[in-house]
Length: 591
Image 1 (tube, helix red, strand yellow):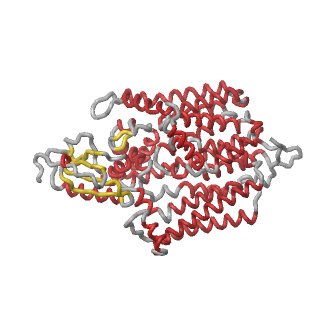
Image 2 (spheres, helix red, strand yellow):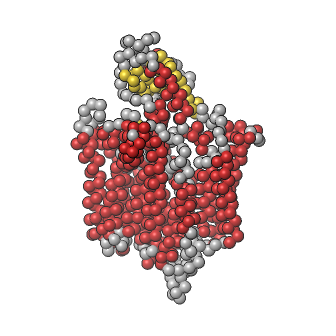
Image 3 (tube, rainbow, N blue to C red):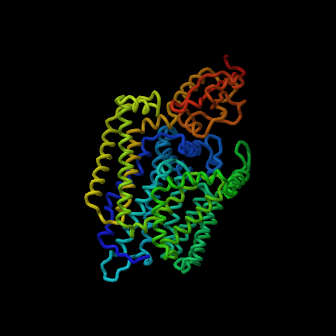
């Protein structure tokens, strides 16, 4: 590539208060006031709640009120449940019930997201401070090494925040957000190992072990392989190979052995707890199938998803790779390129790839994208900026327009469409939402005006509007539209109605059966919500329980073998599913 100079002005750092404010606006909306949603959020919270209310086996075999999660390991949910355990010790048994467990889980998720952003920033800073990435300075006019590295790190963080597909997943309670955090910690550890191989190796080993116990033995092995490849073909890593690999292997192998040993030794298989060894064998077999080879459906999914999921990181990463193509052996380029290549190979080998497999690559993609922005032409920067201004300003305007139509009822067509998001739902007091949404929108307009009028030369200028615009849209959704989204995506009102019917039926006696419910066709998300709000205890044996809770189609016939129908309900926005509670007529129970 051609030589370039970055001046002090171009390497000007993003004001710390502005960067911290952007991170806070990215992290906390969506983790405050939001109910468990029907996506991956409610099942993840349900697994943590089951650990909190359950026994030792629930901490080793993640499940939602008895229904096992076949994808996930226990680590992420154990961390969430552990924080809630502290609340139980402080506030007593009341902390086992709403809203304490969900509040604790949300705050723990927020801390994890902040940790992810911090670890990623330090990874980008460690790589950018390497001599091979520094601009040429024949006349002593370039920015200092520290200023340049800080500007690149700020830019990388903005690219990560602006990545479209990561936004919702990182605000869910589940294994995906935890995986992204561990990958960011791994990136920091590998970058740190160039200066401190022993400390970096230990951190990388622990991060890979955490990935194993959180969800993915395949990804854990792939990252270990990536580290080995780096020590083979990158000169800087070859210099520290022996210390790095030895420091990595011990904590990695020890870490991945902890959970399987606990499963085998503490869950021998006495009823009602399944055998830990059999569960772990099934869990490993499930993940090994992710290497079964490509399928037409999987390849089509990747073609449809990758380009929007990684926007705007992927074009910036491609540009960076092209601009630095003659320095592929430099750690700043070689490290993210190698890891991303290994992850892409996993996508291709997986017959059923999903967002979980893509999300873990977002920090790596952002890490590769940042160096290219230091050499990007002004015309390309302006094109990125105008796209961000146009796209996010229109999205913000649409959110305001539909919300005002929902409140006022005009214009008629827009108001009708807005009410279809949650039919029959009535908004409560709205002044707080108006103030917060108005302040966020005003800040966006001021930022656009500053960017257009000042034309700042800083490296991070190309992505500051993309990151801020996406944060604005998310903030408006999590303030103006949060009550509507809670009604549409959550189960609270349905679960409270079920709880009332359940309690009313309990007063009529149980006969010779227990106060538990057997589930029929019940998905993980509503199962978690009913377990949380309705406090129903699920059990696998229908004959021993007084109740049966069924999820079925509204037009499906009643199941007389389940007993007497005492309640039926549905989520207003999803009328294709209906929930029915039956009360079994048993010996000694009045008819």
